[in-house]
Length: 188
Image (cartoon, rainbow, N blue to C red; front, side, top):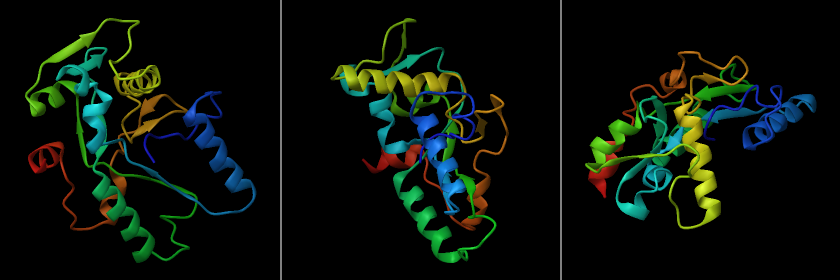
């Protein structure tokens, strides 16, 4: 789930991405098939990621201009259920593959516009505001990933490039209409 992790272990990343990548390598060595689902950020947690609950603002590290991927929890669950029940277990789409879905792609500036709230640029070296130090650290990590372009499901950690294939797995759920941030905001 979440952000692309392939290549993180090879690059020596000592974080959640390296752990996920190492686990996938382990599954491969023991011959257990796996499928990775890359979703970007969950739409329902975007307000939390930007520290909205602390000051009714979209608090952003960097400039907030880098596009990133978001997908709703409902779409993620539906997509996983769809591909696992409609494709055969030996499908070349599933066997030791990464499925890169994308509900929507936008920037932190877009998020502030959608929420109709101010964008607050966080000074370099500071953390995203949060209720606890642990939350602040995790929110800050996520925003560092977004600002660097690594929160796109098309990001390749090994080559440190955007592959341009964010959302390529969406075609496996033909006819599905993916929810947007505005859809979720209007539903609240």
